[in-house]
Each structure stands twice: as C-alpha cells, then as structure tokens.
Picture 1 (cartoon, rainbow, N blue to C red):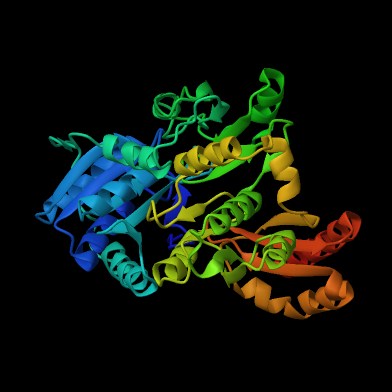
Picture 2 (cartoon, rainbow, N blue to C red):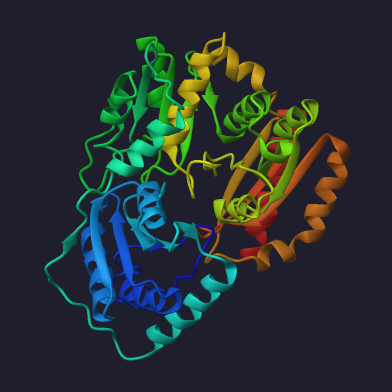
Length: 441
C-alpha cells in the first residue's frame, strides 16, 4: 500500500506503512520541490515520532540543507516559526488519529499549506524515490535544536487579545495527551485565567485516547462539576478546538465560527463581511449567517481549502465543523490554543455566560454522520452510488441535505445527512451507509 496526501498531509499506520524509509523519501521530495534552505521539524507525542523525525532531519541534511529540531510542539507553532523565519516546516503528527497512526504535515516557507500543484509535484517525486533503490536512513546524528521554539508563537496569541487579559475566567483545558500538554497551562496562566489542565501526561500511546476534541465527554463532566466558565478540548497536535459551555453543551467549529463571525462583524473587523465554511458545515450556520447578512463562501473539506480563499483576500475568517478555525490576521493555519484564548475573551466581553452564548448562536439542524470502512481511500465508490444519493436528496427535498464523500485522512466513506427531523436524518444516513457497504462487498 502506498500512502498519498489527504486533506491534511500524509497519514498511516506507523511503523508498518509510514516508516523511516517512507518519510525519508517524502522529506527528500519536499526539500527538492519547495527549495527551502532551512527546515523546522516538530512532532507530537506518539511513540513513533522520534524515529520518524530523525529520519526526516537526516534526509534534509543529506541534501545539504539545515534541519532544526523543535521537539514536541503544536503544529501551529511550527507554522508560525516557518512564517517568521521563512523556513520550510514539517510536523510529524496524525492529528486526532489514534497513537498507532502517524503522519507528516508540510509547510512551505511562510508557514503556508501546500498549493495543489506543489502537493502533486511532491507526490510524483515521492513515488519516484520509493520506486528506486532503498533510501539510506541515518540512525544517529547530532541534531540542531531550535533556541526558542515557542516563545514567539505564544506572544502572538497574547497579542491577539489586543491588550486584554482573561482575568476572571475559569477554564478547563483538555490537552489530549498531545503536543500542547506542556504549553496550555502556562499560556492561559500568563493570560490571567484560572486554569485546570487534564490529559496532559503523554506516554506515547495515550494521545487522543478517550479524550481531546474527538472525545470531549470527560471534559464536559469536569466543566460542570467544577462550575468552570468554559472547557477547551484540543487534538493531538493542537491545531483544532472543540469547546464545552458551562452547562456541558458542545461548542463545535460551526458554533465557534458563528460566534466569531458575528463578533468580528459587530466590531467592523470582518473583511468583506464574509466567512469561509466547508461542505460539512451545518445548515444552521448557513441560516444564522444569512440572518445577519454575512456572506458564506463554501469550499471542500480541509483547512487547506479554507486557506486558499482566505489568502486570496476573500475573508479573514474560516473554519470547519471539526474545530479547525483560521484567523488569518493572527495565524497561517488552524490553532486550537489561539481559538481557545479568543473564545474565552469573547465570553468575557459578552453579557452572557458560555451556555447562553452557545444556545443563542445558532440552531443546529439535526445532522447524522456515519463512517463506513473501505479497503482504501476511494472516491470511486461515491460515483458508483450517485443515483442513490440523488434519490435520497429528492426524498428530503428542501428539508435536508446529503453529502457522501471519501475521507481525506482515513480509509472510510463519510455519509452525512441533515434533516429537520433527527429520526429522518438517521434513517436516511443508515440506508445510504448500507448502500456503500453493499457496493464494496
């Protein structure tokens, strides 16, 4: 099996498929295509991370380039360093996936996600290298450590609050036993908040395990029992945020986007009075934006697609339901800690608590999302069942929405159905999921 780029880098089982030879070839290909003289390398807390990072740094140095190790560090911190130091960036992380997976995210100099043509060129060169003689993997070398990998990035989050503090706020942060485990508490204390930290003891295998942005139930219970103002759940590399209101209700990426767009618009800071969303965004977000006359720009899933429109000057704010939010005035990629600080600030500036804000932000239309495992990531399956998808949409008429797509990060087909009645959304989603299963049996 050959790995390929998904919606956010390359991911796969490590070291079974995503091994040192693979990342050596990938790093070589990226350094040849992007032409950066200096590369910043970071990783999350997975057991396979150190060996893969060493292989990447070795490959870059063998090409006569500089590789700088930042150790365990959030993805947005590497992107920030890549931007201010005009260097290439590589993060060894599989984001929200289990510890058995790992991945590689690549930033071009300037801290930006790869353009389609760059990604295609890297993938072509990668396949050429993989087809050739086995790449030499250097097992040990003297690494160059970055002198100060997090201070400038942390200061940028502090600056984003425009001289305001989070004094008076009580927040609980779930670090998902990931890359922000050693950073979240000092950051929020520096901002003036009272902060409780959970799931910040990584052991290489507990990243995202029953915690973090994909499993916020523990956080919700702690927020309620401690009477905190807000809960903040990060993922393994801390580039996304799912929040929890004071009553335990989830504030997903759609609700956050609604709150931030409205707030920025009221302060005259929402460029073009527009916000970038994805095809997965809830219909309720679309309705809420229409009610306040904020235009929506819809793109395919993936923060790379959001950034394309944001970098074109169409908007300064965009995001995904999963919790990737882009604040282009402050960052070049999604940043869960930035989002968390700005959301806490928004709550403090309002005359409502977080539960009231979340409830009033938008009315979410019932949405059912089912994942159907497939042998490999395949868009062909969705094409084969297009007639069934159209029949489902016809039955829902104007009372719902259907989306069936191949995941860009996992070997699954995602079936999403929205309908005004949850029972209808559930039944139609299950029917389509059965159709997908039948097509691969």
